[in-house]
Length: 461
Image (cartoon, rainbow, N blue to C red; front, side, top):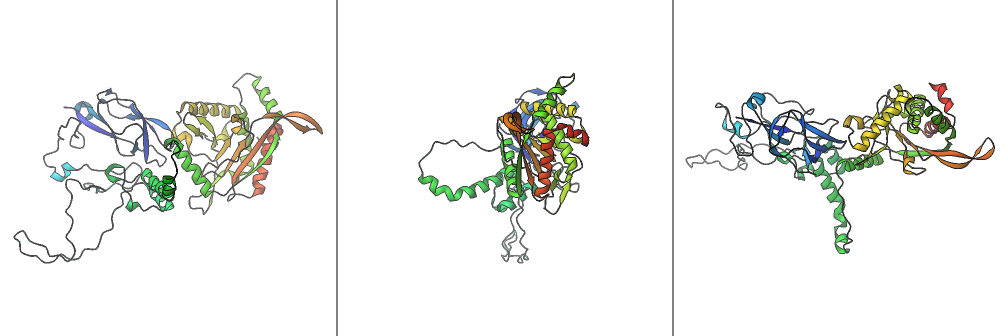
């Protein structure tokens, strides 16, 4: 007889607590192999395919497209042949057909009625063997009867009054929240978790529940005015998935980081001439972005305080020894920031190859969470959009970002004469907590000098 195995959404890393179903890749009744992808989900970091560790027949799916699934919640159940699956914790879970679960004869009634819950991967400490985690939310089949009011007389089975029960101290209600990130968000936004009804398994309070409560608080004062105004016919597009993750991160950056921006125009004629010279020889082509990335790594070696971030509690500054260079890239699902690891160790050619690979992955939407996290400095080439300048928001928790506008022919004074030169505008946004304007201006001026006279890089390499 097949064993029905339940596959739950695994911990996808980076502190993520859930994922949104983008596309199911299997149907109920399909036969799947071990480690075959069954669903495509979107986390706050990327769109990933989730493989199932069991092979067999899909008997159930949980969650529709667009629905958020919590880490540890069921994704699919699979009927596995006994030779492959063996027993499942001494029993067989109920399948969709309604077959009863096989339970060992010596198991207690309440043990067969409630599933043992384990802590999520990477969170908490496993409970002692034999202990079962108390479910939060609705009472299960073995729910304990509520105690009688303090001071009331208890009545025996024979009807005779018994001695009054001793007073029991009130036990505070358990708020069904697992994620510390959700607790912190509620604390920052002034949301009372005890007043929320969770949408997760067993009433678990999810991040989305807190965000809905925050949105309701913001919208409440405008309800009367909106009711009086005529319908405008505007469509409301929900913020979710990657777009919502970007919005949350930018909002946090704007709220927490005292950012300042300085900028300068630079003559990029010599830099463009160097690129044409490099690409005239055999070998991989060198992009403008690769040259700018090389300039950034050299500049950060000269001004290491800008390759840093402020600690979570704001009490110190983390100086990073490696340059994990993020760069803005436009993908199918919006703006993403892939990260080139240890950029300071790569040659200009290697930088170009890695930038090209990550850019192509961004266009396809196939970047992994690891490729989208851990940056220490960001290079933002907004010139590809045909604009000259910008005051970008920092990529939290990074302390600095270099922006580069389009390189365009402009009148420019060169060697004391008016000439047509290829000019770009450079902007530099920095966290004013990590340095003063003198350091930021020195960094930007060094970058501009390298753009105008790329031979200066030879003195630094």
